Structure formats: C-alpha cells, structure tokens
Length: 213
Length: 296
Ligand SMILES: Nc1ncnc2c1ncn2[C@@H]1O[C@H](COP(=O)(O)OP(=O)(O)OP(=O)(O)O)[C@@H](O)[C@H]1O
Ligand SMILES: [Mg+2]
Image 1 (spheres, chains in turn green, red):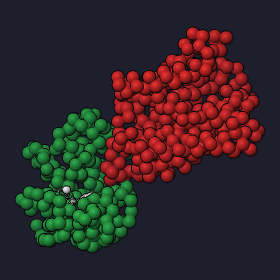
Image 2 (image 1 turned 120 degrees about the vertical axis):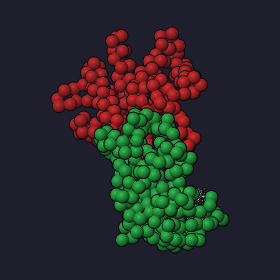
Image 3 (image 1 turned 60 degrees about the horizontal axis):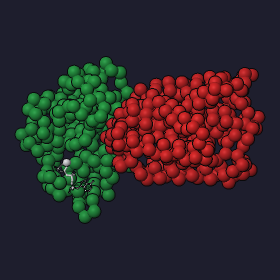
C-alpha cells in the first residue's frame, strides 16, 4: 500500500519557485531519502505535507486519504509526525512537558520513552539545557510517544555530536523495524545509502533524480 | 465601623482576585493580551442583576452570569484569533468599548447611564447574604473555588498545551493540537470567571452603571496581573491585595475625593513604570510582557 502520494505539488514564494510540479509516492514501511542543495525545496516539501505551508497546486495523500485539504493538527492526528530542522523544541518547558504536549500520558510512560532515547535522567530538566543532539532525541521521543506512522525527518544529524549521531541512527533503525514510513532529509550520501530504500533529488524545486538507494 | 471598612476591602479584594486570575489565564497563560476584560465583568454584572430583578433565584443568575460571559468570550475570540499580538489587543479593546456603549444605549434594558439601583443581596436556599461578614464568606468561597479550579486545570494537560502554544503555535499544531480551539477555550474560561466576579460585584454594591466597566478598569486588573506575575495565580491574588490596599491611605490624609481619584491613577501609572524597569517578571511570575505585545 502507498503510505504517501504527492501529486503535482507546486509552491512559490513571490517569484521563488520552492516546489515545481513535484510528484512521487512512497510505500508503507519504506524510507525515502530527500537530497538537494541549499534552498532546493526540501523543507518546503515537508511543510506542504504537514500543512505548515499551503501549496499553490497539487494534492497530498496519506493512507489513501487526501490530506492537503485538512488543517495541520488533523494531519498530525492521523499519525504524521515531524522532526524539525530548527525550533522544534519548547525551550522553556521541561523534557517531560515536551513529551506531554505530544500525548496526554502518565509520567511512567514518558519515562519509558525517554529511556529509549537515553534522556530519562534529564526528565525534569529545562529543554533549553539540552545539547543539539539531545534536542533531536527528544523530538524522536515525541514521535515515539505519539506512535506516528509517517515520520518526516529534516536533517536530524546536522550539527550533532558523534555519540548522539550513533544514538539517533539507532533510533531510526528501530523505528524502521517497527514498520514506520519515513522521509529523511540528509546530506551525507553514505548515511542515505545505509538508511534509505529510495532517493529523490531536488533542484530548484524540481525532482531531477529518482532512484533506488 | 472599622470592621465594616475592613470587610469592604476584603470583599473588593476577593472580587478583584477573581478578575485578575481570570485575566491571567487569558493573557498570562494563554499569551493573548486582552484589553476588553472589563466587558466580561460587565456582562456578568448585568446578566445577574437583570435576572434576579426579573425574579430568578440568585444561584441561577450567578451561573447564568458565568455562562453569558463565557458565551461572549467565545464570540469575541472567534474573530479576534485571526489577529495576533498588538492587533488582538486592539480588537479586544474595541470589544470592551462596544459592550460598554451597548450598555449605555440599550436604555430599555439597562437604563443606560442612569444605571440600575436597588439590586438585591443574594439569597441562597433561603439564606440571605445581607450582612457584610456573610457577603465576605460568599465572596471568599467563590475566590477559593476559582483558585483551586483554575489551578487544577492549569496543572493538567491543558496548562501544558497552553505553555506550548505560547512558545510555538506551528510546533503545537504539528503535535496534533488545535491551537484555535484551545485559545477559544482559554478565552471562554477566563470570561466565565470574570462573569462570576461581575455577579458578586453587582449584588454587593447594589448599583451598577456602565461607568464601572471602563478601559481603566481593565488596566487596573491587568496591572494586578503584571504586578503579581504572568502565569502565576498566587501572584494575581497578591496583585489584587496590593492594588486594592495601596490607595487606601489617601483617604485618611484628608484630600478632597476628586483628587484621590486622580492621585490613584498617578500611583498606578508610577507603579507600572517601576515594574517595567525594576521587576519585569512581576513578584511571582515566570515572565512579563515578553512574547505578548511584540510577537503575539
Ligand atoms: N516561508 C518562506 N517565505 C519565503 N520564502 C521561503 C519560505 N520558505 C522557503 N522559502 C524559499 O523557498 C526556497 C526553498 O526553501 P527550503 O527551505 O525548502 O529549502 P531546503 O532545501 O530545505 O534548504 P536547506 O538545505 O537550506 O534547508 C528557498 O529559496 C527559500 O528561500
Ligand atoms: Mg531545509
């Protein structure tokens, strides 16, 4: 079954064509690597899928349901989760609160999830005190506690220490084993090969290459 | 005599503590600068007054005051939430003035500028809260209940979501939160408690007219909130206590009453300035205007 189908999506900001007639589909349980230079439209594509940005043209489908007509929070409730390139953490809230926004859970459940991303010792710390990598891990904790089915990852390894990079890669593999569908924006081609089933390359908002990883 | 005076101040403190806590929910916790809060206070006061004078029991009028104010909270928030920051503040300010001018001009219902005198003291199941100390007991009970209800709500998931929305609306949406709905709920809840305060006020003073519900009233409540600290219920209570008591000594130094009123405004303005300069987080709060006026 196709988890994600993007059909002829275009988005322009003033004169800038951020996405230009983009179409692709992704099977359930597969990971798509999204590559391309700076400003090629990668983040905009994730923004259109989650309705952070409204496209000018085209359709987005998730599990055979059209979602580009829905508000962002409804798309999220269908099981679409996201790790942001920047600004995805509520800095002034504790690590625990960051999880509880995502799911109305008990402390024990949150603690168990934090253990999986190695943050359980930080549970009551302000999120602002975390390192960049730990913030990413916390965002992974959020998609885990929400049990999202489609996970959109916007450069989750960028600026992350070696140790945390390993942890994040381990978490990604674990989510893949659980059958999650993912779109991963990433610059490191070897990591793309390791983690992805399929690659799409964008340039100036157009798909210029679609290949097996 | 002195006892009556003290009870009078205590009752006012209770009413303003409820107002400050309810505004803190909207402006402190939910981050929406609301310059029309006195309108919810007015709607509660007039609803309760008109219903009791039409023969309804006090308990019904009291709850209806909360319900009517909450309804107007929803009505205001739906258009207002399309706006952010400063524009939201202006919209709420306009709302406050519209309500006040309706109260002034719908004279068949409200008697306009003449006001409504002779509002009866509340009667609950045959017991009349006519005596001052009993009125204080009633007002105090409502204040304590307001505090615990709001504390319970804000300590739970709703409080966490409000905090998240204040930090980032898009990220909150991406986690499945219906940001608009949460804001409408916050507005309705805050308005609801302001409505209760309005009912308590009307049946205490026994006379209401539109001049009790001006922008200056909202500013006073806002000052209580900021003095006590945004996002702190205890702070709002402290703010109400301080600002009700602060101008009282003026009465005893023999100034003409016309001057007392103006001096009070000057004291409030001076206090606001001192706060901004010396203690921007208020006495108890985690933050002050940051993110409300400039960002929304
Ligand atoms: N909200 C916006 N308003 C105006 N222009 C935008 C907006 N978002 C993106 N753009 C523009 O759209 C183009 C694509 O941006 P996008 O962020 O999608 O690129 P990207 O591939 O994610 O780049 P990077 O690798 O730097 O993250 C860029 O030219 C960018 O300036
Ligand atoms: Mg990007």
